[in-house]
Image (cartoon, rainbow, N blue to C red; front, side):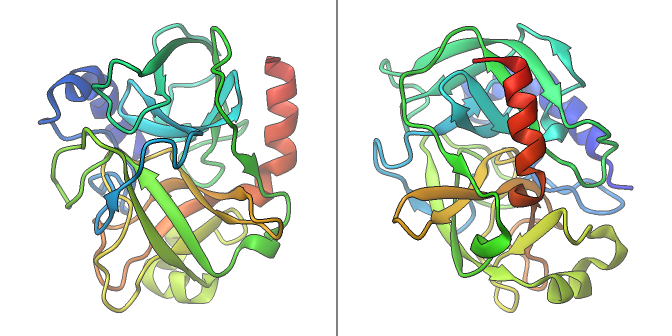
Length: 266
C-alpha cells in the first residue's frame, strides 16, 4: 500500500512554515510504492500569468486544490485527515504570488474525505470554506471523453525532486499515458478506472512534484472552457523517465463529488 500517511503527517507538520519560508520540503504529491515519493511545484514548468488560472488554490498544509464552487475546494484525500469540522486550513486564492498583498485568504469550516478512502485510489476530498471566494470555478469532467490529449498542470510545489516549494505559481503541459503503459511502469500499484496517468514517458523532465498534491490536471473542453480531468495524486520521483505522474480520474468520481458537495452546502 502507498504510504500516504507518512507523507501527510510531514506535510501537516511543516506546511504552514514552508509557505512562509519557501525553504522547507513541501507536502506530498506523488508517493511511490512502497516508499513515499517527494510529493508532486511543477518540474519543467514556467511562471503562470496573474489571472490565467483563477480557480487555483493553495492550502496551508502544503497542498493544492481548485475551486469546485466558490465556497468548496476540490483536493486530494491524502492531503486531509478524515472528515468533519475543521477550521485549521487556510485557502489562499486569487494570486500567482503567495506573498502578494492581493491574496484572498479564507479559513476552512468542514472537510469531507472520499468515503472508503484507505490510501489506494479514491484520492479526492472537499474542503468547505467559511465564506465564498468571488473567483471563477473549475468544472469537473463527468465523462472519460476528455481523458486524452494534452493536459495542463499547475502548482506551487517543487521544481525539482527534493527541492523547495515555490512562491510563484508554475504551469506545464503533459501528455496522456494510457492505462496499459502506465501499468507497465507501476504494476499493481496503479488502480485503472480510478487513476489516470500523464507525462513524458521516455524522456521525463516535466511533471508535478512535492507540494502539488491535490491540485488539478485540466484541459479545454469542446466549448473551449477549462475542465478538470485529474487530481495530483502520486508517482515515483518527479519527472523521472519511465514513471509518469498518477492522477485521480475525476470523471470516475464526478457523481460522488457532486453529491458530497451538495451535502456540504455552499
